[in-house]
Image (cartoon, rainbow, N blue to C red):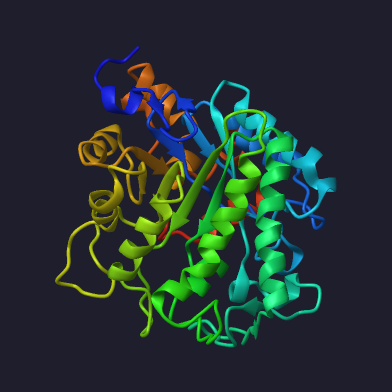
Length: 374
């Protein structure tokens, strides 16, 4: 066993649930586009998770929609029906085969849901404000009944995750999806109890947290609840760091297991203020890291880089692209084989990497996103 990277290889116990993981590495949620049209998983997707089930102490799935009008991708798995529990169990079992912990990420796409994936072709959001992107559909503002229905759906998806054998759920409140849309002054122009000032814009995300926590409390075993967050938005008006620091304080008070900060570059500063160069995750950890573990992610490739992040108040390091290129990243670190960690995606290695066709095609088309070895 390698003794050089002690921070990476040390065990970690989540204070609230008491769940222990065997390392400080988390497999970040990555959309696979590889489920069936009915929301079930496929053999290829299960094989993809199984290939990576030794490479992190905590493994997080691609996001699963909690209600049908929240589906956001072609080939996305669902958690909106009890009929999907056996499918979800296949993923949980594959992830947990080597003793690591499996988390189901649950979400609603909101205005980012493509019309062609929706039953009636109409996306929903906090308000009828389109995303700032070419061809974006103007969503329909959700009714109060639809909001309440969606809150319940997050709780029900959590129950299904428990029954399927997952060790936790991660509430997806990042990457411009519905929970972020309610929090954002750009997408939430409501004047009722679900929108207005900062406190009211937090009402929906916090109600979802309560529903999920209530469901998790009924689990017959310890069960994690985490929350993924995007710290800022480019839009004006948009989410500021000050807004986010208020939200993470509220989340910490909810006795969650962790906050997962979603950024492309862990060390990057503000996207709104070029003079502010402090890492967003570090700002969040400075604010609430003594109350709740913070997971950092973004452009962390090598063991040395991961150790550097763990030298800060960040509790855990998440990796995405790195574990696509190298499914056995952590095993190689443990066994002193760091020089054999692949840092490029071998374009001839799809089969050995167990990457499904839809995800593989997406990776090859995004050549600037990932280094390729031809």
